[in-house]
Length: 329
Ligand code: UVW
Image 1 (cartoon, rainbow, N blue to C red):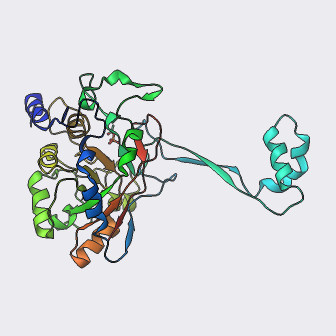
Image 2 (image 1 turned 90 degrees about the horizontal axis):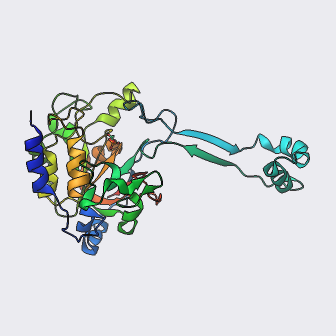
Image 3 (image 1 turned 90 degrees about the vertical axis):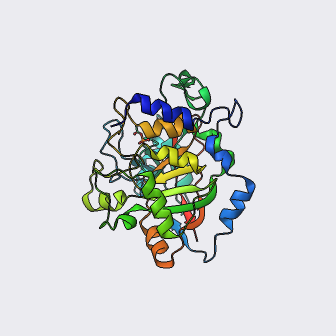
């Protein structure tokens, strides 16, 4: 088991602070140049679209963390309202909305429905913004941790990456297939940097600067079988942060709840890979991405590269965002 001395040595090695300027809040997304965006678009050959987002619903994947819940979806106007609103709405003076709706519905057949959703931004398929984690009072690029306030993140919020799209060349590394696993990689053996290399080699794909790397652990398929959001499964070993750094990857996403392996691997460190990626490297993490259909297609045609498009929502000052990524081949 590694310790904090090992962790600090790696952190010093992978830290990108100042690399793109003192005020930079994009981190490794800077690797996505205009040429890189065009390279990704050039990979579209068949026009086949793979939605990688999972359902945002009450049966979502939350369960591992007690501080997060599955989305609560509420209808605020629906078909059942119509007749009652016409009957009572105009008289219900204390509720201007009822009167307004009755006015809209009276004397014409046109209707509409409305709804709202209450959920953690991390509830299902999502990006972690660079302000999601920190240690020793500093965020990515040395911004003070106190700049994330109850009013939101003044630095490194998800809204800061909007200009990047986010789109690039995507590469799938299918560890389930590499390991010859049935459907998923059970907890016990974290995914190592060597396996990332082996997966790329056996799939005949090269990981290059500015790529967005998708790692399939099979966790999502397992969750669909068990319905247990706390289902244990292998993630990336913390040492994969150096691999991502060496390959100058723009971002990494996986089909599990935290990309990294649930068992830390560093004595005295919680979420060491999150800290190295988000805080030291400035590399965003994508979680709960459904890679099952994409992986099946990649195995069928032997092509593990594609255009990836995954823009976050512009939630002002948020430390993460839901996303509905798509891969196009
Ligand atoms: C935590 O693990 C706290 O966050 P996430 O895995 O959603 O990035």
